Structures are given as C-alpha cells and as structure tokens.
Length: 395
Image (cartoon, rainbow, N blue to C red; front, top):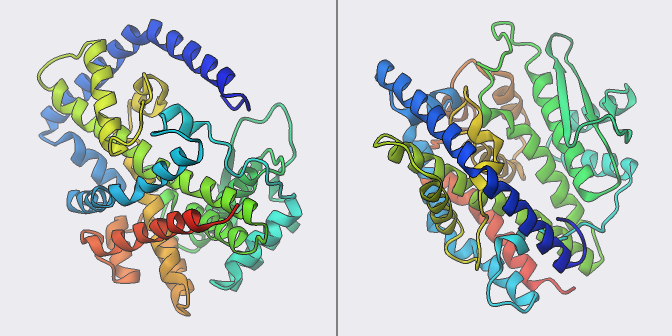
C-alpha cells in the first residue's frame, strides 16, 4: 500500500478488499453476537451501553457531546485540507485510498541523536525537568531503538512505577514517524514517572483511563513535530511535514470519528435484531461519509473488519478516547505556551492519574470545564491554523 506507483497501490487495495469480502459473513456474525451479548448484559445491569464506556474513561456524556459537536461544527473548515490536496493531484475529490497512501513527510530523515536533541529542545521551554528526564532516559539506556526483525511494529513503553523508571522499545529507522514515535513513548515514560509518588494508586488498566493514557504521549509528539516544522528552512520539507501532521490529526477527527459513529449506530440497530453483511457495510459507509463531510469520492470498504478494536470483547468504544486524548493534548499544549505555572499543574495532573475521573482532574488542576465547547474549539483552532499555514506554504 506504500508503493510509489499509484497503479500498484490500487491493485493491492482491490485484492485486499476482495479477500475481506470473502470473510465478511464470518465477521458480521461475530460482531452481531458480541454486541448482542453486551446489550443483554447491560440490560441486566440496567445501564446504557455508552455510559459503561464513559465511566471507564472518566468523562460525562455532556463532555463527549461537547467535543464531537465542536468537531462537527468545524467539519467544513477541516475538510478544506482535503480540497487542497485534491487540487494538488489534479482531482476534483480525493478517495479514501488517495488520502491514506499519501507519502507526506516520508522522505525527511532524522537521525536518532537529532531526534533526541529536537525532543529535548521542544520541551525545555515548557519544563526543564522534562528535557533533563529525556536526557536521563537515553543516558541510562532505557530506550532500545535498534532495528531487529524480532521486534513488533510500532513501539511500547513498559513502566516500573515504584522505581520511577520505564523501558522503551522501538525500531528506529531515521524516518519522521520513528522520531515521532520516540517522542510519543518518552511522553508515556514521563507520565509514569509522575505517578511514582502517589502511594494510594495501584496501577492497573482499571485505573488508567484510555482518555488519560495518551495525553502526555501526544503532548510530547506534538511539541516535537511543531519544533521540527518551525526550525526547518527548506520550504518543501516544511510543507511535507506539516501535511503529514495534518493528515495524522484528521485521522483522529475523521477516521476515528467514523468508527465511533458506526459503533454507536450499530448498537442502536442491534437492539432491534441482527444486521446482515449488506446492512453492516452500508452503515459503515454512511458513517464515514458523515465523518469526512461527504468530501471524499470513495470511502473505505469493510473497515469494520479491519479495525480489531471493534472486537475487543471487554472494551466497548475503543475509538473516541483517542480523539479525546488528541484534542486534550493539543489544547493543553496551547495553554502551556507562555504559562510559567503550567509545568507544575501538568505534573500534578499526571501524578493523580486514577485518583479522580479525568474530567474532575482537568477541572481541579486547570480550572477547565470540558463539558463546555470553549476548550475544544481552542484545540481545533490550532489545527485550522496548521491547514492555513499549509495552504500558504511554498514548495
């Protein structure tokens, strides 16, 4: 799918869809049964299917609604990027396939030492303790960045909270995405370090809300990518990295939004009975159209088969927490600029993970009411500024 020739990418895309179509009945049956069992369990508990997820994530329904309402109200402005990209490739509208196989930023190389230097410098203005922590993590050998075939894709951070340490593993290949991933995992490590001195917390998945889990990590990676963009003199490279950043951001607000809409509507439909393959696929495509503002020429077939998150039997709605964490992180990053007290508030916020629901922690440490649209609009505004900057960039 990442082949430089569009014709070969499209050939693979068609072959993948054909394979998925042959398995669609099996997956539709599995998903129908799983959601049916969950709805029956919720009925016995006298709870709503979404409320269960909201409780696990430490937020209220009004807060989730406020976030999505702001995304919806800005969808026209956000989709301007899709129109800009379509014009660049001389098309009236992009397809989902065009958007997902974009090679924005792919050729920009960042050596490991350069990435560490950039991560350190991007965060030292916010909190010097963070930059010192990054240096310590590297000097103490907490990061295994060597490329090996035995390593899984992506990266992970394993915490040792009592010791105030973590161990990070990733295959660093000098790409911009590897550098971003390194910043991301270091953000997780910083979060875990703040939890060291909270004796009342016993770290477990039950106390570590998904909405909270990605806050520090996305905060780190966004600060780093912004630093790279600001300190790149080459106009074409700057534009490529900025486009890559925007596309990652739109994934949180459009692709994941589509997944949330699909899951929510599937639950409502499933209350009335099982859905066949055609109904499931139609529902999926309708939700994608809404999430992308009807601005693509073609949408992703059988996405409900590809997303393994739909089949996490113990975790419903394994989607919106990512969008939530993304917007929360970039909103906090905007607050951090020029705020001398931010670093203490941020440390306090992270250190109390699991002691209070996330929504209450944000109110306690930053005096922000997440059920109001103001904060979410400020977060979206940062992305709109990125799109405007991209449009004005000279290649």
